[in-house]
Image (cartoon, rainbow, N blue to C red; front, side, top):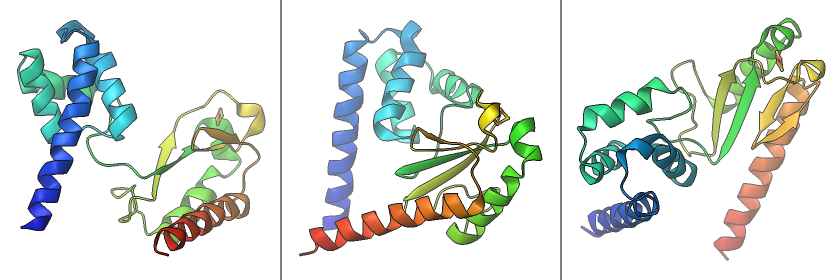
Length: 175
Ligand code: FES
C-alpha cells in the first residue's frame, strides 16, 4: 500500500515537471522535439506514462509522439543509468580496438547487446558512431567527459572510481 502511494507520488512529481516544460513551450505541438528533449534531459528517458501525458496535453495522438521518440536515436524509451558511457565505434576507434573496452564493460557490469543499463541504474553503456575526435582514438565519453587513447584498463579505473564514490555517498547517507 505504502509502495503504491510512493509510486503515485513519484508519478505526480514526474507529471508536474513535464507540465512545467509543456507550459514553457506554450503547449505548442510544433515544439514537440524540444519538449521531448527537455523532458529526457530531466528524466533521462521517456516513459510510456510521460509519452501519453504529452500526447494528451498537446492534443495529438500518442502514436505521433511515439513516432518522434522512436525516429530519433537520441531519445530513449527505457530508463538510463546515472552515468552514461559512450564508446565510439567509428572506423578510427574500431581499428584501435574500442571493442575490447566494450567487452570489458559488458563483463564487469553484466551487460549484453540487449541490456545496456545495469539493474541498479548506475551505468548505461552505449556504442556510438564517430564522435569527431578521431585523433584521440579510441575515444570513450563518460558523463560528457572525453577520454582519448582509452584502454580497457583506463576505463575500468574510472568506473571503479565512480563505484567507490557512489558507495561512499551511500554509506554517508546511511549514517
Ligand atoms: S572514429 Fe572514434 S572519434 Fe572518430
